[in-house]
Image 1 (tube, one colour):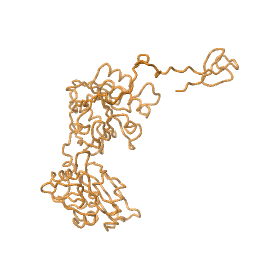
Image 2 (tube, rainbow, N blue to C red):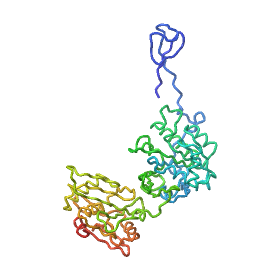
Image 3 (tube, rainbow, N blue to C red):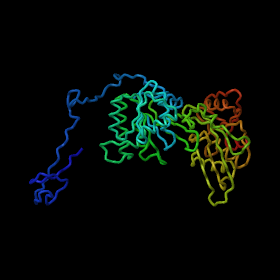
Length: 456
């Protein structure tokens, strides 16, 4: 760090940040002279010993000398959360739980305290609620108070002192946007404050071997002073997805140094808190209409878990010069691409129609394996013909209308058969040997024209 240049008066000795003709203190003229500030001593001085002024120096070691041990995991009491974390929480890890305000982050963290307090000491730090408010919410969620300590604090230095005094096994911070570091002059919630506070919590987790859960709010863009700024600093990033007015919540792992990414856990928001949904496929298909055109079921892979999702489409003639296009739960650009392929390669004139595409249950389908189901749902609505209710469609659609195989097709077919479907539409060419579950009929097609001819 460069030293700053100071100016001082030779008569009275007062210092000033810049040169002046007259000293404001003693009113003397031409007495201001330049004097460089003293440089701070470097802490990384070259020494031959193992420390500098009592501070240990971390030296490079050969990889053969480093011992590797399995990480210590413990269950949080919620199977869906343990699945997303990779088998449970890891001691000494820093986990960031992000999501829109009101999605259920604080509720989830308070609910896992009920199980953690049975074998660990938990410190719950809140900068948004008082201790009394947290206790009232804990009583509503039926959380026992043994081993759970509450602290309403926004000063990070006070939080660190409380951790050193209490020595908890688990620390929960709600939320990172409310904490502030005394050495940073910016307001709480700013990027510099959030990054500095998270860095301090990371050092606390690694140094004291404490599992730290940090809650971070996400705005509509998902980037301003939220988890997007901190993803590279933490060990695990969990995102709560779903609409606030919908019952289902999806917890997705965007980053995990101790497990697989893109794993999901499904919860349902009820009056008594979040409840686990062990069979999300069945829950997503509950209430599906029978004999209605414009709907088709597909199977997508969320991490290592196959999940069935229902795609609904509505195609109607448009009275506008520019037809209306709406996509919910499906990538908008991808849906426009599929409509163009459907018109060019499928022969359906959908370009002059209003089109609405929706994924039931709050899921957001990203992988291309859902292309074929979206195409069939659009074609079914356009022709007003029904796709069989016992049929699912899996496959990627190319720009020439061809169908390409999806990965992990065997797991998808097993999930399709387990949910009671008897037919499945798949691409004709698949990679490797495919084991077909008993009772499931496969309909193999080459392109979307063959698919529509076989069903519609």
